[in-house]
Image (tube, rainbow, N blue to C red; front, side, top):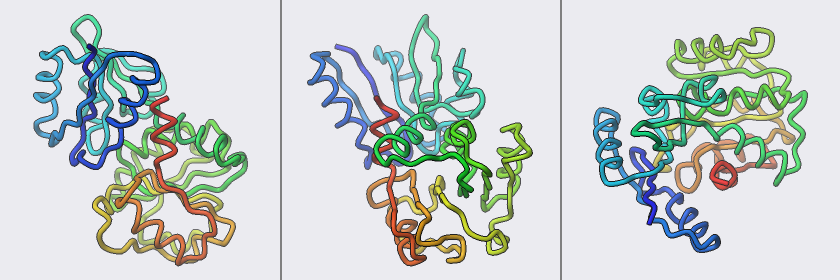
Length: 249
């Protein structure tokens, strides 16, 4: 039997074990897939312990994606662009990393939702591992402008600089978003609403009824942002479940 896991903090909400169990049943592959809660300071040790039990691969969710990147012997080109990984494969006693977040998001939006991303002015909220995973794919898909806002502005600056497209990718102060006009696409890649508690505060003028609001979280964690989007008048709101399925495919 092959051993796999998803690492995160928290991780009890994750649907990845159910998705991969279904995959195993459909394909006839004998596998087990655990959800392992690992705080950032203990992640490397938890990953070593998993490898010692025969772990062959793992998925990585918040807030560990950048830490996972640092632990890899090799990474894919898209993982290097992101500076974060969500997929780990064990080979020759080392971890090798990939990032399928961006491809999963774009497939969900363009496939399941039949959305043409070309020419869309896009606001990306957050600058952590999830934001880093999807930002390059959004640019590759043809968005006209990618505005990145994070409550710690230096992280948004660093992500915008790392993308290497100064003509399209720009960072903004969170408190200055009210001056940015409206967006065709708003993506929440923050972990601020994990647990589904509290309100998500953004200026309503960022959206119009035609704005698509997407939260990369799913379940209860997506409630605050999607509630804001509906209150702001967005007709179409989407959580991250479709992206999760696509990036796991």
